[in-house]
Length: 118
Length: 117
Image (cartoon, rainbow over all chains, first blue to last red):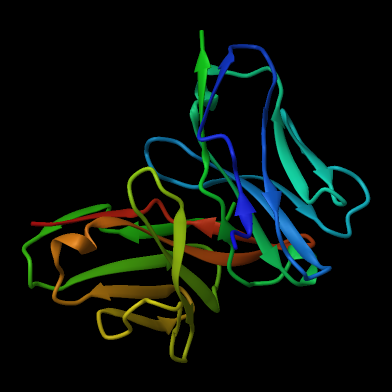
């Protein structure tokens, strides 16, 4: 079974508007971490935001926020005030154990291609 | 922030030859590095976990003899694709874990695009 599911292969958003990218996960480990990465066409993976399973508050980093709903096992990324430079692939990932803070590997979803329209 | 480099960024080789890809952590020591493979428009798939001074741990379905990994120092891991074939053409990305506050962040290299003709 897939551990990370991103159901939106592609999304469009108007510049300056907010957009939500969906991510659901599956794990039996009570301790895990959820990550979002951005991959522009150049191929580099850019870390955006992290949420530990034991963290009480939803993570925020600038224009990025993570809507963490533990009971639903979802960790949606919200990008506010979209910019043209936000156009890229976005990957949700999970690391099991240690609230996600270990050195273990990341398990990635299939990604969502976000296109920001001027 | 922590930086991970990869070399080369692009390589084209003939079928049957071997190709070595280097992954370096530039300003930190990485006891653990990861090698991922990404086909066009697909996700990153973990190939192996590279541990300094010991044998790499390969994921199921990844051929150890074909994808040789050497983590000889705390700042360098290499992936050698031996006897490459066109189906090995892919985007290979390495990453290294670095403690940043309460969590080990995983920093990714810029990737190496391998084309086997």
